[in-house]
Image (tube, rainbow, N blue to C red):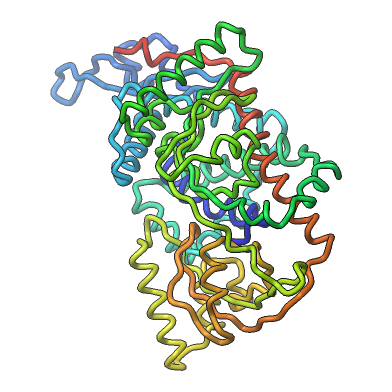
Length: 474
């Protein structure tokens, strides 16, 4: 589903591509790096040594080495190099100038350290993903891609990965998600006073909330940092800000210096409703124009620099009869996701073709949704039920609101892919007090999860034992 208020279900499926392209190979200790090696065991250990080839002449055998030790695990140089190659290719596709290789590798290694720490903690806590659960997730992913399991496996292997590697990487990703839910999401508490405060905002305040697409750079502060450490981190943030103010590229700077997850993709965190942002962010962004930046913002997690990439007005505030009455729409859709297998043009053209088939009565909307849609609503013929204002992302809602009953949209692009939308019914309904409170609670929850996840990751990183080996290599 693509509803704002319920996205956890499809998030795992959406992230499968990230697993394919970003997660490193399964990390295992390499005994060869700690054992003395002789010519006779050089093949088994794979260390850099001289061995006899078929010609009888000494030959060099080059193997993996350790980039970093993380608790009881290691990150190998080959894993780091694989991730470096993938991240570099992604940055190039985004037309982002690459940071110096050593700097970018350092950034990537830090992300891999945090991933390793999460995987190890999940194992210690007994958070396991069984083969049955894994198989169900893979089957669902294959189904959403419109492929049988054998076709899906073939697709994975054509990308240069073994299917077994893909399975284990997905298993790790599922375990990390469950760990984050256990450590962050499940512990979020929202009291009535917070909800009352948000519900009590005037309609004018809600309408001016708006949405912003943000670039984000974070200089993280360690847990229990000393005044000297805080001053050092602030100095680093200051240098980044001065670089940007002197005309430096924000995306390249994010890839070079940001400690946040999105740093390696240029710092773009996408669209955010301002009433779902931390209060310090919302206040700092209040008068920043498109293309402008904030100064340095302090939070418990570190120092932040934000750039406003785009702004748009909310579409979920509609003039209605008595102030508490809104229009509900019963709609259905067909979603084609964009990924490495399906380009944006291919997705758009596919939906144009499907729309024409519906118009020509060669197939029904319901049949095509069941066959082609990548959304969980496919089994219901794409039926989304009754939709309140604000339930969907703005691009979808704007297009849906403009349709007459029975009308089918042209392809509509959102962050989830391309949609073909049909409106089935419309009606006016009262917004109940309980619904207002539920929506307010959801906004607060989203904000607290974002803040809580960042804080938890900071604490986890500070607690992990790390021994860097990369700098010691020739």
